[in-house]
Length: 81
Image (cartoon, rainbow, N blue to C red; front, top):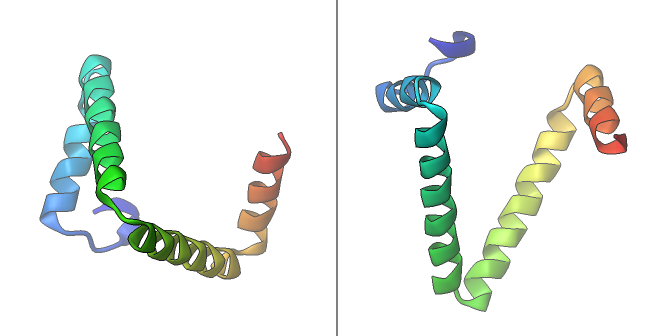
């Protein structure tokens, strides 16, 4: 499996399919994903959107606190560029 972590068969299948996509297929897939996300956001009401934003902020805070020093340095270098 990938990075010595357990992943589901479905996730592994999707990862493998993405890896073998030709550029044109990849572009089509990204376009479809963007369209689906846009439709989902237009259906959300203000309360649902606020809940989504709050959840994202919480997850980002958790991710930042779990960062190693090396990851933190890499993160800072990326944002300074």
